[in-house]
Image (cartoon, rainbow, N blue to C red):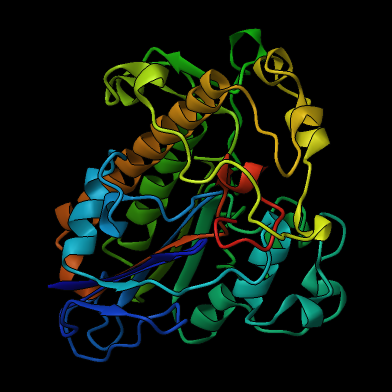
Length: 362
């Protein structure tokens, strides 16, 4: 068995294929094409199943990209037997436009989706999306979590992109919610039995996996799973924070915490609305502290980075649960796994936080 992983510069993809040797690619491609006659999830012996996993706001700061300070054993193990893309760029560093782009196969100048208002269906009502392409090819096309951005397109593009049994015979589309962190902080360490966005997504994904691999199903499956972490808030089980001994004080700063020399003002973005929502950001001076040559106090930067890394570790575990379920069903060799981040994220790099920029971090 071999896998393909593409996680780079804001875009991540991983796929499994028994006939593809491990490799590292510098091409900007984000998909694996493999053909063989290995067994699929159902009775069909000519088409490989597809597990398509999206992680929200995931920057390519993982051990498989030389970042050993991040704890992510499942993506690390997957990358070791995968093709890893190192120059895969997001079309835009914002959730809705990026997802409208890679799920429709068109750039934002074609989709005319640049923010959280418009979606590609307004321009291309008859365009074939990625999940719809599999549906037309005879796949059971199902999904859960944050695949499209909520409402863009409306109703997760049901029923056009997806199997007619979604929101009918099978479960309704599930988009996770969770309580706010205590004191409205950016991150919080919670008991393992707490309500988390991504554990809900994982449970629904496992139910859908059972549906599409039932004994009476004869078609291969395309299963899309959208994890919310490491998107803010960084609310995660205590063990994911314990994975970083020393806590925030032991967390390193970004390599460059101010803007590049000679950077134009237009390159800088101040995410006032997004950061104003959190009490610990306010305690650190609020979003207006941000400027090209000014960053938050170091203890604040370390704290924010610590929370983000713990959320990555938590998401990594959820990915592993999905991969284990595929393996438990005996489908690893016949299932392509694609793991993609919708774009990157700033963690104090270039004095920036969040996304919204054209720097490679974002």
